[in-house]
Image 1 (cartoon, rainbow, N blue to C red):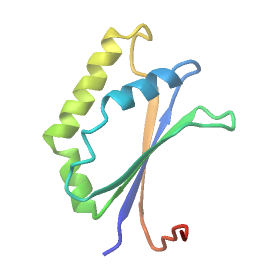
Image 2 (cartoon, one colour):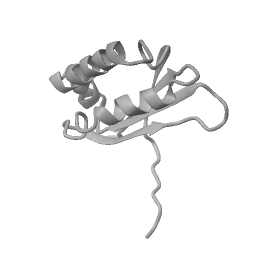
Image 3 (cartoon, rainbow, N blue to C red):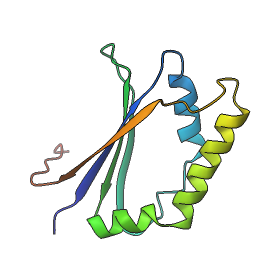
Image 4 (spheres, rainbow, N blue to C red):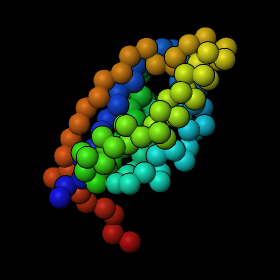
Length: 112
């Protein structure tokens, strides 16, 4: 069975990147112990775009869907909502989001 990859592409207004990164750092630990979770990366843009990418890899689509319906997912997003209300930024760090889904068909890692 091939892993599945999810890219959550977040549009982040100028000056809100640090806030977004801080909020993700506070949620550390919520996804790592989920069944089927394989990898997470928060990707910061370096080419002038306003798009951050949240990359996750899962053993299966079912595992990803289970994560979306989990208490840990709800807790993490509730915490992000609360942080946005208390933030000097005064709201969400991202103004839009788009989810891209892929199945891994080839995977190469560096040789030691």
